[in-house]
Image 1 (cartoon, rainbow, N blue to C red):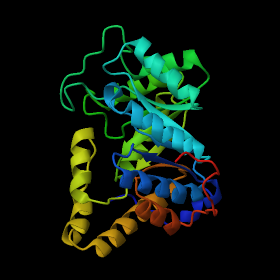
Image 2 (image 1 turned 90 degrees about the vertical axis):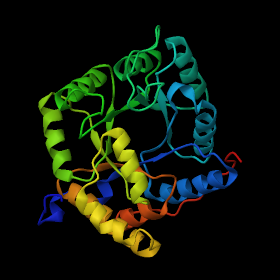
Image 3 (image 1 turned 30 degrees about the horizontal axis):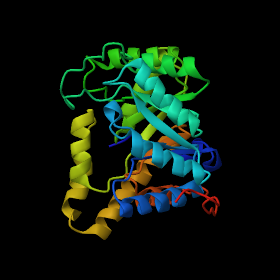
Image 4 (image 1 turned 135 degrees about the vertical axis):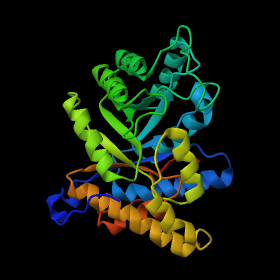
Length: 305
């Protein structure tokens, strides 16, 4: 498990903790309603931003644009993911202009999965941005955007090793990235060792831990297999016996996520990015469990329907 700490007070004040939340575009009317309710509930923690995913090759451009527009209409600080796979620079720049026109000032710049899917070889599009570092440079060349990028404590599945992964992160930072959001992980020692290597490489931007409270163990294991993350045996051993007992499963998932978050705070980490799966219950329970302050908030008048 993670390294134990005996003095949680060594970490930052709970008031100084910065949060961000990731969502994906809803596909049905019911999912859309749930997303707005989730965003409203989580906005009580005054997040730095709410990001919305964007399918490779622009496959979710229209729903991503609609979701971001709605969040901005709710008075929330929305950011859009952006990928460059399968498109020319001109096509990507046109998408950027569409998002900029609705008020987007923050992008999460990602290369995107290969057109053949995870596990297939990646080939840059002729005339396109070859990778995320080039995409960051392209964004920064168009406007003074805030640009977040990805980072991988257990390395990207297609990277030769962690050193190559950190080298790519350095290239993204040199191109103008302002923040790195990590893939989810469950071993805080591994994250801390990764962060030490990142700092030794001269990378000074915030490297924000990505946290995923476990709603569904099988789903998380599937995600982990696709992105190169590890689901520790101890976590599966705790959750597998209660897979068909929702209340017990939720209680254990919250307990484990609270312990992970508390431990990271005790190590001096003060910024966190939650993968919400468009649900508020586990994320809010975790935030409440570590005593993060929240405010009463209502959606802004005139938010898009």
